[in-house]
Image 1 (cartoon, one colour):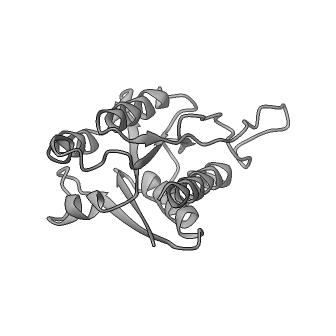
Image 2 (tube, rainbow, N blue to C red):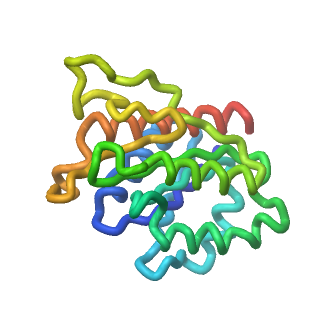
Length: 190
């Protein structure tokens, strides 16, 4: 059994929807046991979460991009992860990330870069999307990797869209494929 942990914050529900797609993709791989940990509005996780996350073979990070970086609630989780860092509890675990914001760009890569840096401080093995971009005139929000994220899954949820409306199908499929890829690689490395 390959344990996959998804740790994320969602302020309005859009990133939670993206996390559900990542979860579905990881769970689609035979032998995967996927647990999602939603960081609460105070930046906290349940008491046993850090221990459970440390037992996973892969950790997938997620946060909306606010003002060019992850939400402070996710950053609090990153700071608290100094305890497993000290003991190198996450070393050689697979890592990946996903983010969402209202605009097409929104400096989403800054959030992915934060996740990458956090993973490298922990000695993890980073996995990108491995997906080609949908970058033709005919491409749009229904296509996989329309936002051309290579380092992580990027999603767009317009500011006036509800979580039922966004992220859109292509962004959710991109997230699902990232979850699947992480689970496959974690099983292979395990």
